[in-house]
Length: 481
Image (cartoon, rainbow, N blue to C red):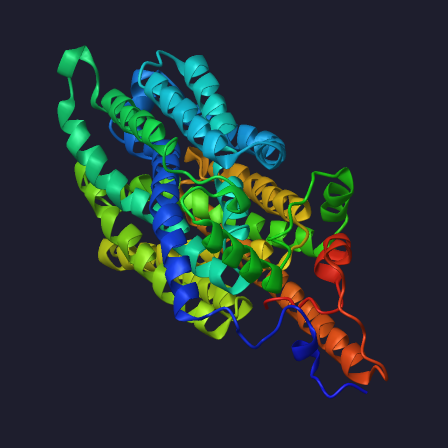
């Protein structure tokens, strides 16, 4: 029997030979190139999809002569398009180049957002929201996939958290921006809600042009790295996962993703959290206004819960990365969100209910930041991971469709009591899925350790081709739990 432990035998070693001062400088260089621009793109993406919630409370629905349920339909159409085009968008990304694909998506949805400011009726709003979903569908899974070819597995969750923090910042920034732009009521004969879409869309278009020069290409072709830095980067990735391999697109990896129960588990986990993420982000101004605040006050009062959510994301994910654990923190975030909804349900005073909004926002956003990095850390090979990430968002956003349809006027009694109860049910479902994933992966890690430890002869290391074919089922591969 070999005198090496299972982890010492494997290419995915627990001994870190790639954390030298030179490696740290390399990672910082990658961070400075990837994180600011990609986080900014996601902030704009979330801002442009959720600013309709700010527009609603200053006259959008009234001006378009829409019944309140039709507003919910407009929200749902965005996610219908998102669901349809998520997986195809990541297939396109895998075949082409993120340096062109991601800025182009940004340019298109920025133009669509501007057009949203000129809608005249319900039908035009429906069409614009669908087109917005089509354009934005590829950004989030595309960025998560790009992270997976630049960072080692344990390095990704913190970067995903910073990136996803853009969503919470969009909520905080969006409230302030909507309040300020709302003051343009009547300028050039346009309503304040119209200017929200037009100006925020113009900002997005401007950033998209800049993004063409900043968004990186694939790691093995990265021009911002020297030859020696690229070699070192590929060595780091090769020792950790499949990310250093230049993998050609093959349909068999798509099939592997479609028939992997863990991939479906990650997708169902986001399904549970997406229900509360999008219903809360889109209806937070309405929920706060229903507590008795004026519309302009509700715009500004969305800022503190979203700011708290950003702080909660970065703090919790930093601790999670330090201990290299995900499941306990996802469950903790769900419990915090449930507590927030219970406060909303059980208290009568606006101040106490506003505290509940803070708990709900912190828990919901933090849980999403953690779970969205999980398949990127645990799914291999590359194409399988790209499809897994896209499936997670696709199936998750079916939950978003349900959320925006359930938070409807006919169920707004007692400040959306029934939808809040349903939100708690979705969060409990997410906790159960997290438990399933963590228990199964813990047992599988142990099973593989036992096989390597009990082998009377040392099992040879897999070749790169074998590692690529076997992916996350390779004997030395260990799941992050």
